[in-house]
Amino acid sequence: MGQHYDYSLTTRDVADHYDLSARTVRDHLVQGNLRGVKINRDWRCRWSDVWAAEQGPTPRGDRAQAYRAPLLSKKALGARWRVSERTVERWIDRGLPTRNVFGSVRIAPIDAEEWLERKFGVDEPTGSDSKTLEDISDHMGRRSVAKAADKRSGRHGP
Image 1 (spheres, rainbow, N blue to C red):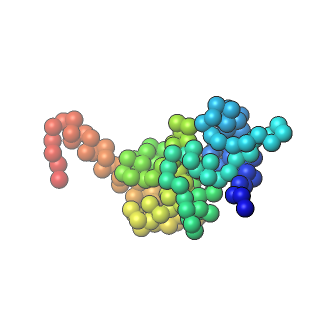
Image 2 (spheres, rainbow, N blue to C red):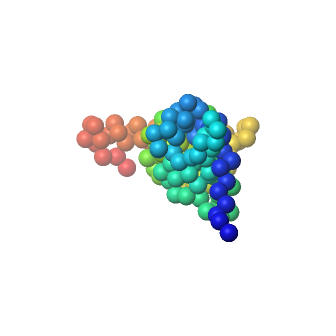
Image 3 (tube, rainbow, N blue to C red):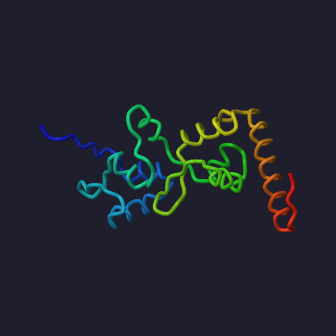
């Protein structure tokens, strides 16, 4: 019995997952940067091919379903958590897991949620829950700016 290949993802599905345009996804399919098959005039992909193009660990087992959620850009993650894009960049510098999609930085929502829970002990904000995260990001930003200023002036503070 042969292997079952599930080429159920359309170009639009992949584009939505990557937060890219369908045209960009088609271009990468044509260039061979993303594997897929052409059925009649439409391209189709498998999840395994989508994840392989993300240049991140391939999700396995129970976690695979969580990695089917659309990836977030730095801007989208910042909007979701109500913080600046620069704060997201600082999180990435501190170890927030990312996935590289054709040169664009993307974040899996499950990775962001788990990392922020481990790092700061906060769940995803809903409504007024964002004040804790805002306080944390404000503190991180002020502390980073103060350290950079001390370094430039030659001072070494506590």
